[in-house]
Image (cartoon, rainbow, N blue to C red):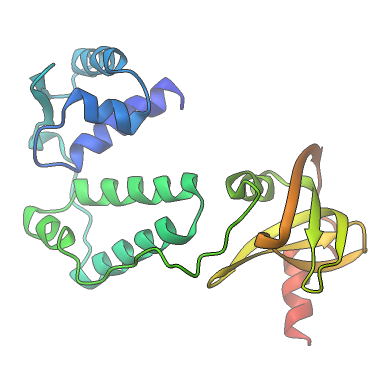
Length: 227
């Protein structure tokens, strides 16, 4: 994480909390040392961020620092909270962390009454025993889709037949409890959907693919509609 991003994240983390946060807690959340947290807090204060507290006691952000509240009703807050919990239960670690950070940002700018309601949601999503083991790094696959990188995979189909594929990953699709990666398969020269839990190996190459007629996500969607 870049230092600028970390400083922003510290402020967001403190915004979302009504009680003092210790340096140790901040260090765990940011995955850095406590001494670095102390330096970051000092730098934030020197730049004008009104952080109250001290090392060994804890830190609290002045409520006057909050920006104008977002206007969510309680049903919308329940929907956002439930969605974030589902992502934490079924997504990869990086996107789960991003979901928690997004909820922190929302909670931080809510009026006191709504913030209390948001912290007492009536809808919950828990980890399921039916979650399938995934051998590859789902975060890397998701980022390969975004950066349009060709990916080489080892795959075992339903019958147990193994193959090596070179694909253009186009999107991830979740149909509980299965993650699918929809792709243009360079090996078979056609669209394919691969169950992520059946991918035995994966290499994200340095080769970037460009949108090409007949091989895009839009073409895949049209093909599905015409079936």
